[in-house]
Length: 391
Ligand code: 2PG
Ligand code: MG
Image 1 (cartoon, helix red, strand yellow):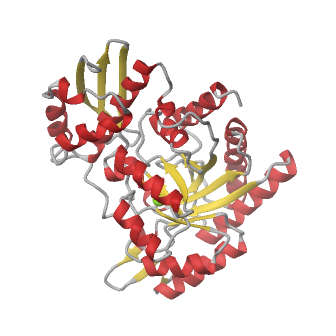
Image 2 (cartoon, helix red, strand yellow):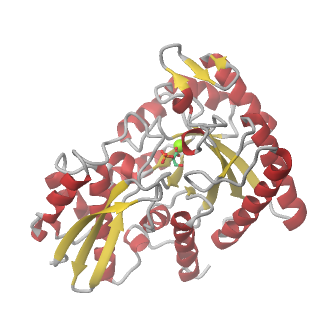
């Protein structure tokens, strides 16, 4: 029997919201896992809990451990079948992750090695300047201004993004007269500049990093367009202007070209597969990425594939509440040449399992943030994996 006992409890995430932690005792020791919480959530995401966290905690604490006896990674499907509808997405994720950690311990391997024996490094995407729902003034409208060092050496990429973060701070100090050094939910810098002005700063940061350290970094944005889309008027509501669909497409395409962006996440609202397809066609060299559009859901990914809507997909296991379904999304995306970006949530815990999943699934990118202990532990875990893999 893999599991001797299982215990769930409430846990506060980085934003102070209640989420869940699952602790599993095995003959080889104790493992634990927890789930994060998003704020700019897609409407098609699974519910984090069935009624509330207390309800799910009670269900897990009443489980007969025989239900949790897995011998192979894919056996978590049986656990899922038994508990589907009884606990929410966050609870299922924490439970499945804890069971996989227990299994890895029993097999004497690392968590990521349950998925693959071959180590493949990932590229980093780090949120450095932020707006939207993650920032106190909800400005600028775009949610994340991301930087991606061009190296695949993960330890080096983490160091470069730290430099990016501090250069961004000094440039914001210089060019944003109301900059106060405030950090948002993901510890990205808050600013009073508008979207295009922030991209100008991002461009300066990119130049400075090249000049000072000889390193190339690319720029990306998560527009999280659903968060400022008004369904009734069908317009994207900016501080000084409201844009119709075609105007939004033109605006975003212009910015993407002007700043030679690498990456463009959720440029349109979460139901607009056709709009995504137009942008993807216009911006052939840029990754057009679905997050709220696809919500780690196979059916929505199939639709995106059929419509040629995306060239990249965000994978967040708690959007779907199943590690099996998340892996299916990863495999399907890869078969269609769609880049896989494994991502944290804005409300995070100290969980590091997501780093192992990214490496185990051979993701192309990780989006784990840059600063703050909840983000740093994940980056640290990546470096640890890289070191152990002997790179
Ligand atoms: C996103 C995420 C993470 P949230 O939109 O990509 O950065 O935000 O977790 O709030 O959904
Ligand atoms: Mg997003």
